[in-house]
Length: 210
Image 1 (tube, rainbow, N blue to C red):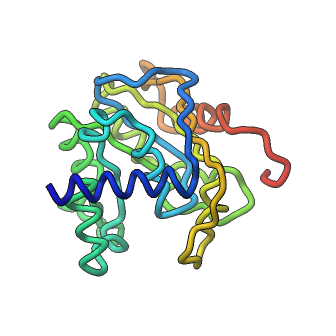
Image 2 (cartoon, helix red, strand yellow):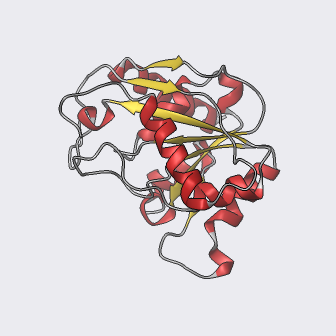
């Protein structure tokens, strides 16, 4: 009950501060398992994606987040574990026991959809996107029936610049593109290039980013 109330408050605040709107250009909201993969500029990126999903989808959609950040302090832990039911990954461990892809596959097998940031870290550069890590490819290969949906978040890095505590009110958009899947015989490099191109294809034109 408390987690549900917190979820409602966080969603309302996200919409109030950002006036966020969701644009479903290449697909429609659906109940099938999906991996929403998005550009990454802020720790609050997944909140915006989550807030524009229909209520029924929010309940089964889990963000993938770094344990090293979200488990610092009781408030963060409560939000990420109880409100968002995130798949927490240890970005410092390299053993098979802590393989983040294994944990994400387990969540998909339980019927969840995922919110994933294939750049692997927040993009603080002038490039529109950093190179993609291999996790998205391994997920697509392990579960080829799961639809991969590119999602472009626009303006959140301006709402919550790095180091700021108080958000700056500004209109944000979350654009959902057409779903894709791993093609038969497609290798890792080719797939990641195609996924990256699909994400850039739904990004609005901007003169201040390369």
